[in-house]
Image (tube, rainbow, N blue to C red):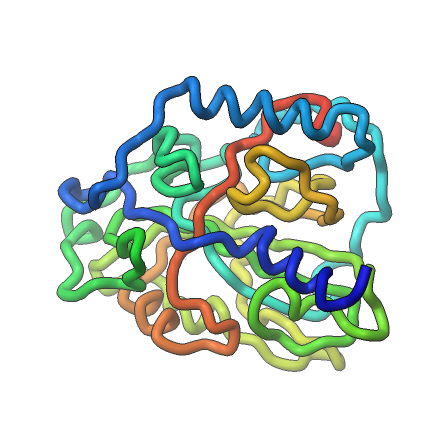
Length: 290
């Protein structure tokens, strides 16, 4: 496979179109309806059919509280992220993974990754939910609102690269099949002025000769590690061929929604909106045992 075709495929895999606003606060769903259970069932059936007997490895996202899985295709676990290069940061509207403190199902959504996924199951104060004074990370599918949940993916590669736009930044001419690792952190957006600064949470720099995300939270629980794949709603009906070592933190952190909005206005990843989610993978044949 030529490098550019790999780059294009990687880019299309995990960086799907922007996500729709969630149900927090009401009145900002837009005109997008929610599909019925039959549509999601059909997508799951199509995924099972298209992957059966084809040799696909374990997939992502999954319920991090459920350890069962019967996919025995193995690959070498990527090194710790501190021994890899940060190559991309992006986020999804609602958590792609389920478990820990994010178990509230957002609904089926529109069948294309918007208004689906999982939300923080805890309580937020009236002050934290105070409406923002302007649109945050607006896109054709909606904006972000106080109380919304996002899942941030800190993507790492063993290739010698610098951070950049899309997962194509994780590849290099010298290594076309690098090991990939995603450090996942779920955040809840608050507007009481007490949330963490997203610029701080996404700050990067060179440490010990490697490109590093310098402030990934270390107080949100022991990460759940598993073997999976790239994500994004483009893989609702087909398997991802990319092997990814995942570390998903089970506890949420609260982040200032205005700092997320400022980040969307300009960053080296060219990210300006939230992305859609892939249906939670539930088929045991597509999950690694944990």
